[in-house]
Amino acid sequence: QVQLVESGGGLVQAGGSLRLSCAPSGSILAINVMAWYRQAPGKQRELVARIDSGYTTNYTDSVKGRFTISRDNAKKTVYLQMNSLKPEDTGVYYCNMRRDWFPTKDYWGQGTQVTVSS
Image 1 (cartoon, rainbow, N blue to C red):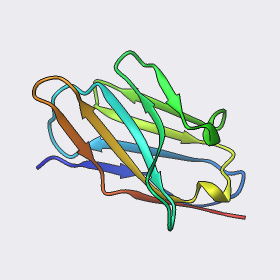
Image 2: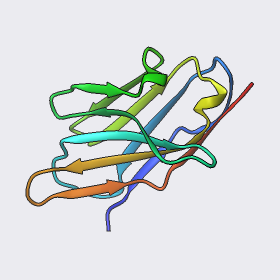
Image 3: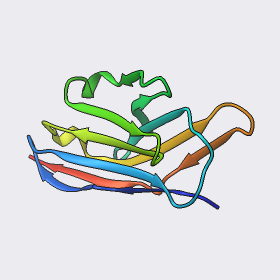
Image 4: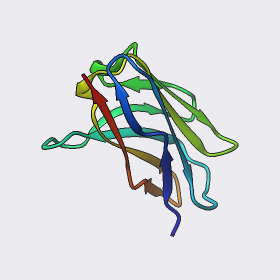
């Protein structure tokens, strides 16, 4: 069973930066949508950023101008560059990769903790 493996989380002071990476643990078919979600303590999981196969990106309002999502199709890897971090960015960040055409697939990572101290 292929899973996604995230890396790059950690503890950082407010105003600092982190770069998250996510890649599959084995071979997978071509993916059209790659995304990052996060879940803060006591809150529901929310979409942070997504990028499709045409490199169109979307961000939740709270991270616009601070976070950048990118992808490497050859490596089937997605990145999230997080700058000017705020304490409210704290949470577990999950990677998601989705294939919408046959055979459809929906992959998730185990999550990586990001903690921003004030």
